[in-house]
Image (cartoon, rainbow, N blue to C red):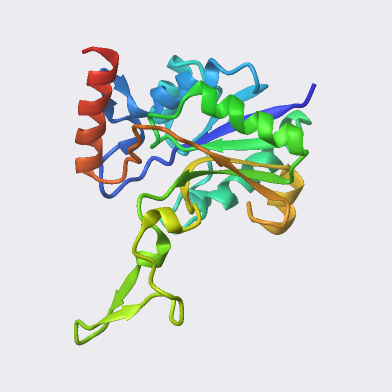
Length: 233
């Protein structure tokens, strides 16, 4: 069986929303929604919350995730890339447990509307393609051909110079954006190249009707309102 380690990075520091990763959302800590979706998956082998915070670790364990270590301070700064923290985690697990998964899946604590079906679907695509990496994407609302730059004098400028303007969305090829929800890669790729994006990276298309990525207090209030409506509170 393919060993798939799922990790949820959850740094303690947050400037926009204090204690963001465990902020209350529709009666549960924010991170609990993602833990619940991952715990219900039959595709993953192990679920770890990667954090530098004892408080977050306590919450994560209460909701069923492992916290075998605390992330060192040097991997928990504002400027620390998530991949650097994941690299540390992979090396720690190998050194302290002799554990080395076939794939690492990273889920974001700030995406409470992620579903178990999405997690299983991304894993299925990974295994079907024997991919080096899979990253979730979502259809964009407006074609990228409609993008414009605003110059210093407020004059509109083409974002893609030389491209003809296409007025009807139906005439534009489908485009997708990275939605920051699901990342899967072989550990060797992350450790050796430090990226999710290589020639053998596939896109898992998410069609979620409801989606909020929590970054601001308004995002949190909006997600709380929507989630309460969805779960009937």
